[in-house]
Length: 286
Image (cartoon, rainbow, N blue to C red; front, side, top):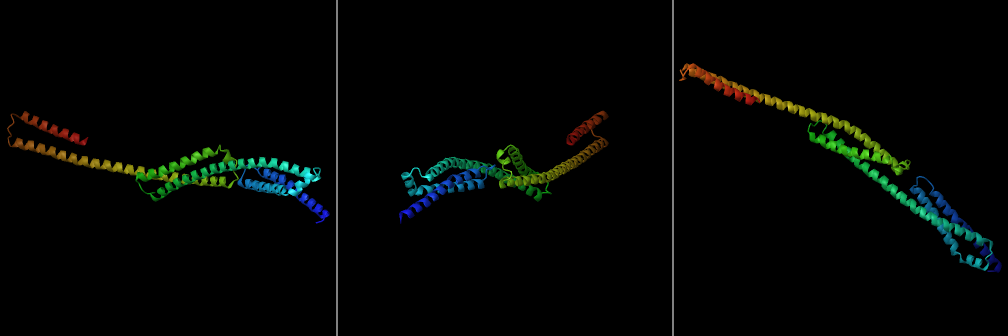
């Protein structure tokens, strides 16, 4: 190759290296710019990482061309030398800053996703508890057994506790409040809305079950009272029969000339026996 062609080839290579060195900080600045969105999102971090990879590739291509740097060593005053080294210096400074920034943003994203995922898990649990309560209220809607009422009420209370605690938490949670447009927050809002709807429905159903269980208790109490009255009536009837039998016995004894010392003694015996039976009757009634 002639000296002229070698010179032209070297100049062409220097121009290419100069362009690559200029792309080095430009791509890094694009990476930095991609991270300036608020709130930060995974798409922005991926975009920044992509530009950062390009920037590193630019520097690698520049450093690979040893012929260019050898030429600069021989000719330190070459007009491209200062430009290329200035671009490398700006790129290196940007790379160090953006690399740390991407790491920081990834940590923020991980923490945010962990927080929001925790809310989703809680709402899934609340939804399950509420649906369990709803299933019980549907399946045993006409049952009067208090067990089903308490089972439904227990599941309902658990779901309600989770729902209320979550609402209180997200009211002051910067992660939730600053990511209202994200798909995950929208999913949380949707789950929260459905859980609240479920709770309102189950609350009505549980109230109906409670009324039925109370009606059963009233019916049972009335039945028990009626049975007690029946038993008491039978006992009073039996005591009355005993009392009548006692009177008849005393009268019969008197007509047969029972050996009482006098009429007063017969009367006192009658009173004593009658009083005993009256006390028995009183005890039975009580």
